Image (cartoon, rainbow, N blue to C red; front, side, top):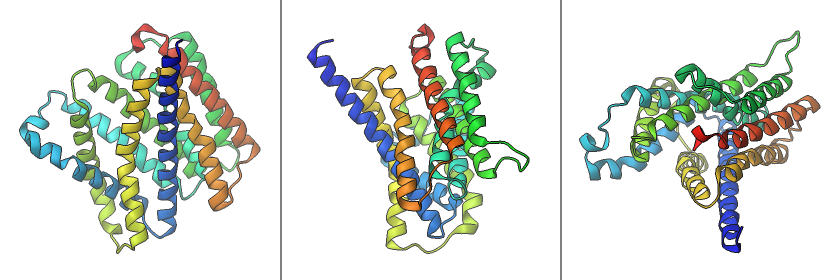
Length: 293
């Protein structure tokens, strides 16, 4: 590896870490907004509304007929609803479970993606990845700590957030071969905004300057993370960048402890470590398969 290559990889790592920090701080902002009395349904509705507004100039420049022309409306709808369910479940989980728990269950999405792809397209799961998946699911069970009292609704919502994100990731990959990124985003934000509206309208309320700025940051954070993540992949390989998303777990844990005084229990720590290890293994083993390139 030349010095020039190492320089590019280091820049990719920096962009990847920045992506993680933005995502973690956006989650903290959502949890803070809920503490200010805002409903998660209202927050996710505003988030997607901001996304739609940001894409309006692109939509007007090309014209709606050209910008939205597609033969893959069904997959756009699946991708959009998967992402919407993922965010809704994540935001609904945040008020009732520690931030680090909700974050790691959402970041378990790479463990679910091969299962979604297998069910959807009957694609074979390579043995190294299958073993990583089994280990990851063990980690999820350790985190959920099922007992006679049952599993908390917040943790189940965290699992649902990871599943929704996995469906979104699998569908996005299917769309990437024929659809430009802005079209995918436009359908995503538009469909998710419409899906959020019935749940958000009963929770409309006046905003303060602080809550308005918080909502604006949450809405813009989606675009910011996408820009940073794209830059990261342009400088460094998937095997370097993808595992960096798990840095968000200790970041979320530190913020959760600093702001709300939450310290994870021993079982949660063990589950988190298993999920992170198996998630990284699933990403890196999958990247060596020819079908993944």
